[in-house]
Length: 538
Ligand code: N01
Image (cartoon, rainbow, N blue to C red; front, side, top):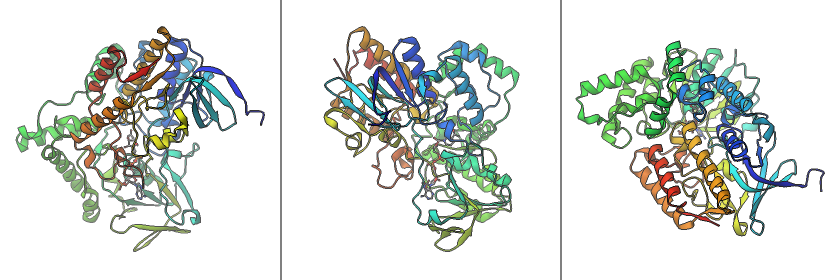
């Protein structure tokens, strides 16, 4: 037994992760409920996804005034965002500001990885083991590990032979990377690649983009916020909050009530042009049915494809970039700064790896079926094993020693994205089965954290010690999650991480709840009002 291999004292709650979720969960349980709580975090500091994703151009697609905690008027009045969309560095400063304001860091143990946790049925508690050999016993275990925190590094033969340097955008070196004078290859054209490519192109000697699936993107029109808008955010947070709580995706703007095909082609074009000028995710709100009607969606898709063809001068590149195989916004729609314009630079090339696939990585670069691309650096903007992997990596064992991996062999069985049957007193913040990743994350996070905190407060008030999702309620919830997705065009993107389709061997299940945040919130409230319907409490 090592010095550290010892059981620490009994805690009320352990929270895993110190991002947006874990920090607020800590504040709620420690400061509002007065529980003994420990936070465990792999990174050296707070920030979660923004701690790791420091790649060039990393920026949020939620507008900054909505990408904030809304639980405290004081926070809203004290913090001022500088740009329409916050960059990773400003978000990290914000999260550190919040952590310091509430003195949260003292309750987190950083540089500490949870390697496993099991539920001790006799004692009705979780034993959590960390990589330094310490074991913690806790009544409640809360995963705040995020949905996009497990990097997907493709297994391409020969990577270890590459003589240059390679990077995954989700594990970016904190000191930054200087691409000046280098021949750089970027693999992946999702939200991340689309943000990174224009910035890398500014430095690199040559940039070769390896595209498997062409993607839509809307101009972000990012820029500094003016004083009038900053004042509005401080003076009327209630108004902004009310909109965010009323809309399906938690953003601070309404979705139009108009059906796309109810307007003439010319009227539609004018609406799309205006939305294009506004930029960002607001474009998706142009019509009510863009995500439910294929015909409506095609009007938006065609508008964007025309914009791409008009922007990109080289006809071959324009064709490759606009040959998009899925409905608009069926994948999370990227927003960009000069993405398509970047392909007009002479030193930027585009390779269609669907036609000419990557076969290996050799010491000098990337080998496709037909050509060798000599490179000094490779950037994998290849996304994440999303939603389930970060939770599975905790190596949980629930009642009767059941592994979460087994409980989820056919997909992430859960109730409301909050609990898994057979795993009592274990909660997930914005887990699979909840709307989180489809909405403005802080809105979803605050709702979940408050629900979990209220549930724990209720249990304490009633002297209850055990809460667990019922199997039947969970099975029914899975049906609702499927039905909600099927009512949209979201499952039509074949390679989407929403479906787990980006990871070989992963069950193809639409993981997030697509019924909308406002509806989901009401659903949770009703369940609570009905005495925590679908949960077993004892
Ligand atoms: O990851 P992705 P991401 N060989 O999975 C390609 C959030 N986010 O990091 O489509 C070759 O979307 C893959 O190709 P394909 C946001 O929620 C937000 O870009 O599978 N290529 C695709 O092009 C987002 O949705 C912000 O055919 C491979 C790309 O890599 C989520 O993070 C910014 C490959 C991966 O795209 C993930 O975005 C950034 C392989 N083996 C991210 N494997 C903002 O807030 C994958 N690809 C703005």
